[in-house]
Image 1: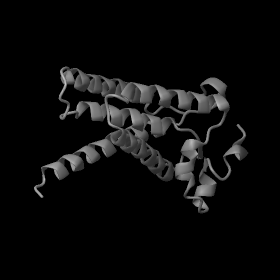
Image 2: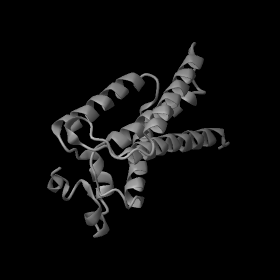
Image 3: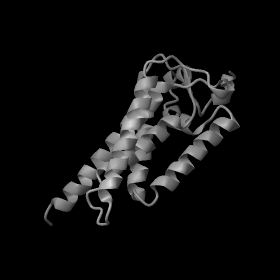
Length: 179
């Protein structure tokens, strides 16, 4: 794999340790190949289409930001991660956060809201099974010889879910506090 493509923007641990802290965030928008980028864009587009009428835009942004922060944290803390590029970890955060948003949809006033909550729960359960199956696996070489750094998926999902939980709790608290 040609790592010089990552220099400056993708995460390269030696550069990060030398002071390139921004790579924790920019690496999530750099990709190894066009196919890698296209898969991430298609995944985001499908999730945006699926959640657009079910989860408000602010919650979706919080989910994505939480995913990005979760991935940045694992990149910073895992000395075994030598390099990273791609948005799949952040996208796992987007999915997890939106699923939490569906589960916590207390303010839905339309019929069938319980089905939406069940959908959120099913998404969280499915994502949990996926993450459990891949947990602890060494980097795999899927299509295009691009290794998958699975801890980014776990950290992104945790970050997205936690960020949305905190956001919804703060929003509810603000709504419940008398003026």
